[in-house]
Image 1 (tube, rainbow, N blue to C red):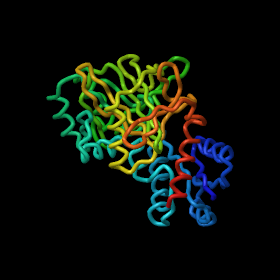
Image 2 (image 1 turned 180 degrees about the horizontal axis):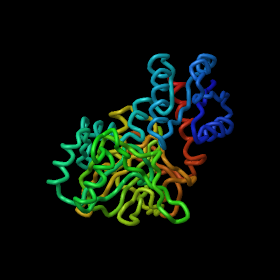
Image 3 (image 1 turned 90 degrees about the horizontal axis):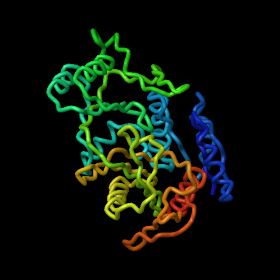
Image 4 (image 1 turned 30 degrees about the vertical axis):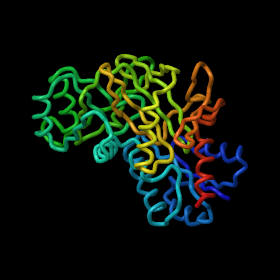
Length: 329
């Protein structure tokens, strides 16, 4: 077996490479960012499958990477991991909320406005607070809880342009540098406004499924936001959330997925994010009674297995799963 590893903008491909070395799998690294990307692929069509990692920092980079994956997977009929359908939702909140709505999975009411006047009418009549989000952005970047109509109008004017769309500056995300929030105008989104109904939450659950392996933990609140807080509650996840994640992945035929689920103060569960690729910085993404491990889904049951299964940022587990898929095909 031979796997092709596609390069990415932030060298995540090196984790695929380390995983292949540990598993003693033959591989080749392919420059997927080059102007000659298509010839590079054609030179390596002897690969059994390709390991891929779209970026998300810049919408333009993500779009081009996904366009190339379309030709690789859908036109050249090459197998990729993660799958194209789940990556179509990755760091694309518009696609994600549409997919959740079509399949009737519980999530916060979300509005996507392309027309400034429609957005103004909504903002003037909605109940505050509301949440405005950028289409891309991890760790709560691009997310703002809006408490007043005045603040909502300001962000709306940034996105659509105060006078004319041609003069729109966009609403920039912010990055912290020297303990100061600095607007990153190179990542500013324009001409589209995403507004979500506010949910009062106790915490957020992250449930991970890779192959038949499940993990779960709480993301605790910091400044009323769970994503990017860095605060973790290591407790056993409810069976309902494991089943919900299983149902999502079965419906979409998803290989690798982190499902972030709000638990509200009223006891409601509400899906916030679906991310096929996600931060996995610890060798274990679940501790039960301080014991690291995973649940394996077998014959309708979740069986706890002790151990460290998320090494190399969970990429090792992904490569193992891809190998099993290719062997079974």
